[in-house]
Length: 345
Image (cartoon, rainbow, N blue to C red; front, side, top):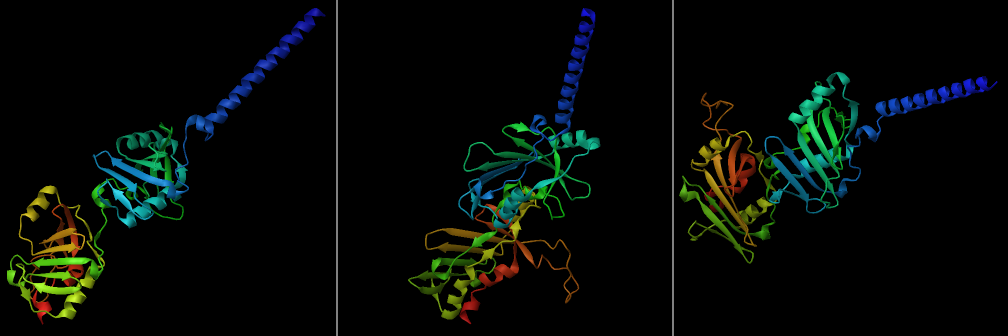
């Protein structure tokens, strides 16, 4: 009888151990295959309330860095220097709000994807409410082969997710990595002038190869006057002068020049500009634009002569304040750089 009890107890003990092993195995397989934080598979890329975003830092492995800081509800500053493009900033904030997981990375390509992101990525740090620590960090990798998704990896509280994911914006057919601009030049606002007529103090238009067509327009106490570059008063049509001052309310350049190398840009700067425009407002702020012809890279033919135009007839290079090298359009600048005779007709 005593031996039988021993055998029953031993049998029960074996069952308990077996059950314990099964439970532990179940827990292990559950957490190994789940999306829990034990594996640090961070999936919540989106920022629900982007009004809380006060800074975004985007860097790449070529040494570019864009630090975007919120100045107010509608204005962002790039690297503490100039205003960011509103269109690009709006796209970035919408991306932060709507970004979602499209699919996990297939196991067959998981290792190669992780290696690729590690070697080629843009790091995007997102700061909320002026915090010194980023709320989230994205590592933005390459696009999927069909260009309908972007490989990304998320970091939170200094810990990276164990796996990347394919991300998307629901309803948008395209990739996302171009929305994270690391080159600060590409963030530069295209705005040049936003003046009402009464804001302007002096405008000078100089034609280096035609000095007799150059002039200044001065405004003081609502009196508008045309002079030569030395300040000698010239007869002018008052109505045309007043109309001219209204043309500075919305003047943009097309884009920052990103195609030309620094050496190429320097070579263009050494040539003679075909006009120099200087605008001073009543607060003393001076903006100067030097215009340089752009070569006729598209080899457009003049139908009247059958020969190529000597330069691009639509666009030219504009150097703003001797620092920002841009591409500008003739239809934008022709109305604000007429020759002196326009005002004297």
